[in-house]
Image (cartoon, rainbow, N blue to C red; front, side, top):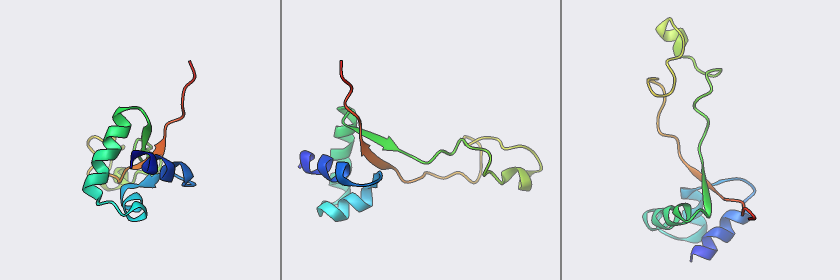
Length: 92
């Protein structure tokens, strides 16, 4: 099953979300999450998240009258969904 997960992620044109992969492989999301965490721990997968450090798109400075406080204290930041891609093999 782990090989099927890796193959599905490798074949995807872009990083794949948990929900997309769950539907594609017909695996319950909770069970798939555990398998993905195992593959991440083993160094086979990489987690991709949106870059929330970029202040150019931040609008909180407008409403608060000051500069952006950054993602740690921004009231508009929420937990973004994670996507996964296969980690490139490093030759030694």
